[in-house]
Amino acid sequence: MKKLLLIVWALSLNILFAETKTIVFLGDSLTEGYGLEREEAFPNIVQTLIETKLNKKMKVINAGVSGSTSSDGLARLKWYLKREPSVIFIALGANDGLRGLDLKESQKNLESIISIALASQAKVLLAGMLIPPNYGQAYSENFKNMYLKLADKYSLKLMPFLLDGVAGEKALNQSDGIHPNKEGQQRIANNVFEFIKSEL
Image 1 (cartoon, helix red, strand yellow):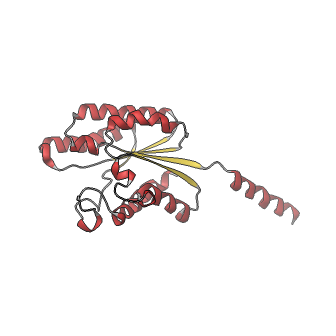
Image 2 (cartoon, rainbow, N blue to C red):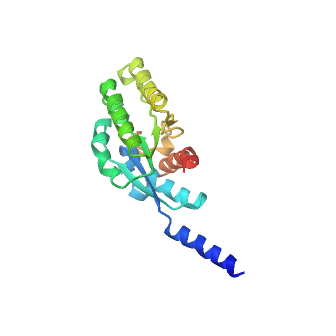
Image 3 (tube, one colour):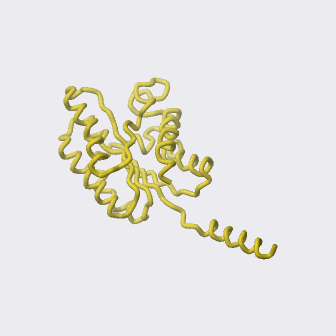
């Protein structure tokens, strides 16, 4: 009996002092939760889902900044690496596409982000995006394929479309038709949780 109690005590100490792992969600306004309270953004909801559904202690850093392009994300990455994240979820590029930026440069920036993140020994996950054909069908296709190429080149797990089930749904978006509302962020969080849970 005494031996059993010692084992239970030791396990309790391990749980108590276990290092809390960190996930960085590197993104733009979609990640930041534009127009909403910070806790209503999908990264914060994902943290709650991890803790309640997986019974895991996890620190989530919402590194989303409105207006961020792939270039901006690259500039911010090293700051977040100081937190020694175990997982980095990259959700960038939407603003590149909406502004019609040169996709060769966007891909180069994303490759740099991925390379630096992988070098930190973090698990890197990639979220893809889709854009309307404002700059022509070829541009939209190249934009979509950019994520497929990156996932293939670096052997990354790819979430094909971050806004799956949310984009174009009036009830899930704010009045601008671009940014998810509270219910839309919840839908994204559910999708992201299902995508990343096996990686935790």
